[in-house]
Amino acid sequence: MDNINFTPKDILQKEFKPKMRGYDPADVDTFLDSVIKDYENFNKEIERMKNENDRLTDKVDELNKQASVGSTVEESSAPVSGATNVDVLKRLSNLERRVFGAQLEDNGNDSHRI
Image (cartoon, helix red, strand yellow):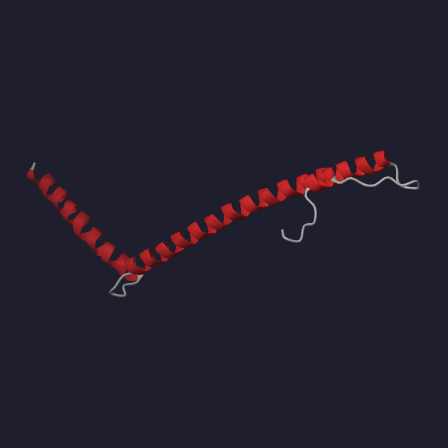
């Protein structure tokens, strides 16, 4: 903001020398009051946008950290043996057969004991 020439206070305190054929001082004051309001609104908007930019920059940094941690976790949790989903499903199916197959055999033996 180095290229700004006037602050609202500078505009408010500016005094013009009266001349015979000048502008109506009341019109000039009214116009300058409007300019001051615009400057104040611009300054508020600039400040709001800076705050939002800082907040969003912090959020991006946070998400980048989470993404880098997430990719590290994904890499470390990848199966070392190179097993695919199909291999895992086959192993799970075999385990289920062993567990539930044994339970079915036990249930069948119990009914014969009665």
